[in-house]
Image (cartoon, rainbow, N blue to C red):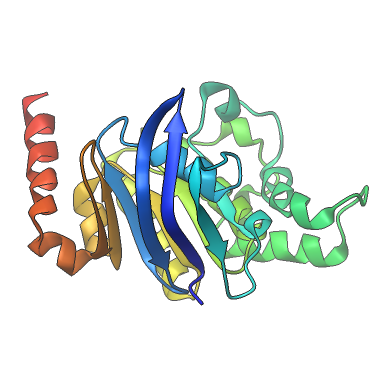
Length: 238
């Protein structure tokens, strides 16, 4: 069975249907980019995958032993979150909260997992620094390490490069690609179409009137690839 399978999924936002009869599958090891127009339901779909939004109809199924609570999630940051007064180590290990349950303290194994992900993402020299003192790119690496503490199978990233300069953006994309190649499945919501097509094995494109799901190569050969031209044209004119 697929890692995630949606079947005839219908979702609403503020009493308006934003996604209707959507079906797609994510296999272990995939790198899926979700792209689409503003208001096409991308954020609503993310909430549904995390169990924060109940579908109007249809189903979301999880396979390969994945539990919904074991999805590593990197959300869009607010200004208040960027100013969070905790150390890097404290933020990273908080990704183990779901596995900790009702225990008042983290276990030795959870501390080891946090330490492994701090090293994995090149944060060892920053582990005692205050999160609020870090650059935007450093903060995103910390949040990515936190997401990895919550899962061994799937990370869900919502616009992870928003507000970052081009060099830091490129470095973060390379890091995410390496994580995917290590065996972690990636689902990423992004407006960065070029990078989505460069790294993604599969693409889910949502528009107001239509949707596409398939491999990125299939997307480029489809009529829906016109969406890419429209987005780039809007960006150049804006």
